[in-house]
Each structure stands twice: as structure tokens, then as C-alpha cells.
Image 1 (cartoon, helix red, strand yellow):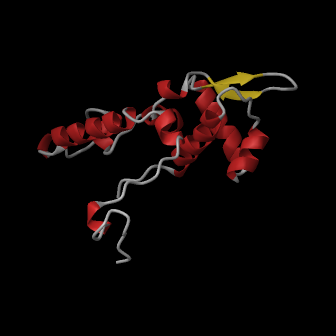
Image 2: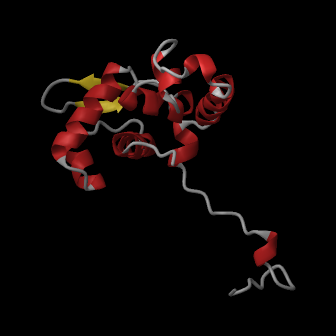
Image 3: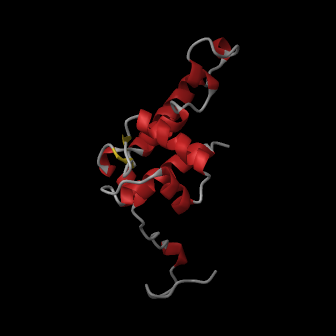
Length: 154
């Protein structure tokens, strides 16, 4: 199973909340309250996101965090990479040549690179603006029965 790490998911959640009010300065405590995430986790993630230059830290009594870029300039891939490091579906992609004892006899390694690159590109195509803006799910044609306004209960 390919799954986003919990911390990367939380990083996207925090960034989405900040993106909804890009001019507002958010404290770690406020973000912890809004998201119901533990304060130590929020603090750790905010530090990683600021280190990756996705957030800007403001010092002082009224300090906190703001987006370092416009929401459309930040990608989901950038957030995940800031939290977890480079996206790699297999060990050989993560560690490079020589990381796997089976590398010399593995015919799938080049194809894993293609799959990994496609995933990274898909995540790069989704911006923080895209993911932080609620949008209704489109109705599937198979769920529509008869007239457009009548939706099937099955």
C-alpha cells in the first residue's frame, strides 16, 4: 500500500488552514487549536515548513507564521518533500544506485522510476490553493437516474 505519512498529511492540513487566510499571522498554539493536532507535532511541522521556505516565521509578541509564497506557488509535492524528504516509492529510488542487493537482476527498477516520476508530477500539479479550496464532488453519471435532479439511492 502506498500511503502518505501522517506527518505529511498533517503538514498539508496546516498549510491548508494557513492558505485560507494568507494575510493572517498564525501561532503554533492557534493552529493546534484549529486542527486539534498536538502542540509538539504542530511546532515540529511548522519548523520543517519554515526551513523549506514555505512558511515565514515572524518573531515578537504578535509573531507566528505566514505563507512565504502565494498559495498557487506552493505545491502538494513541495509540502510532502519538506516534511518527509524526497518522494520515493522504493528503496532503490530513495537511496540511489547500490542500495539494493537485487539491483543487477531487477527488471522493474527503471519502471519504478517512471511511476515515481509520474506520482511526483501529479503532486506537483496540485497547488496549495487547489487543495485548500473546498469544492463539491462532481456527480457521477452512473448515479443519476432519469432527470438530472433525481439521484439514485443505490
